[in-house]
Image 1 (cartoon, rainbow, N blue to C red):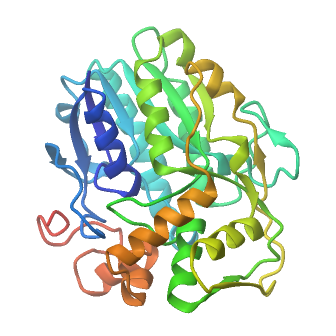
Image 2: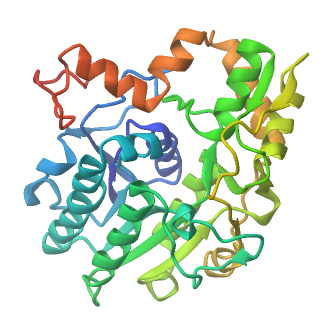
Length: 346
């Protein structure tokens, strides 16, 4: 299958590209290059690429593809809160426009990377895909809007599926240090203490980046009637854990580190546990392989192996700080567009 993968230079995209190639697909990437330099360790797998901002995609970019896997987004709650208008422009409007262009270009399948954070504050009950959507951030709200608007485009020739990923973790060539497990393992390694600023009680569903990639690869070739215009939670109930439990896993993976739950920010309203049974049924027994504990060990080993430093951890691999640096240095304008042609693709 010939697949256009948006965001292929990102945290999930670099892992997804390898999975797709391993499954025998013909992969072309589409990416603006915002995070092209955020690499720790070996370079990601190389695929042909279209270097364009998601907001500037044209129909000519979509011809000849059987499917689009759409990952590209500003995937960061702090950034979304700082600049919600940019988050909506990219994550919502540009994503829906991409889907329309894909449909008009004859693309038959559209796999959209949504998020379990659309459930917001759901308490202790396991939420299914039919649960009320209560997004609490601009990022999560943008995902809900895309699901609604792309659903309206579905017909017999255009089949979208919405994969609501749990919070990602795990090592990727294009590292992110601002997602919970990745962050806490890094803090433990660099400081010796895992600091939890909330009270540690909120629930989070977690899933490894490679398990996300496996889910997308399975959905890509699933019978159309199994996935057409459906939403599926991506993860496993085993990895429904509290923030305190995530901190304990990070400390267990890093020698001589301890946990400190400060509670200084008070309770976090984002708390939800997720039911993942639907995707196991739809995708022929799909089950994630990575536990939180295994992921913490993997992260620590790679951080040590590839020489993670505090400066890299807090700047290059923290999305908001990285973008602020690019804006301050004159590489990006206020709307996160490159001011120099090709600046993001090196």
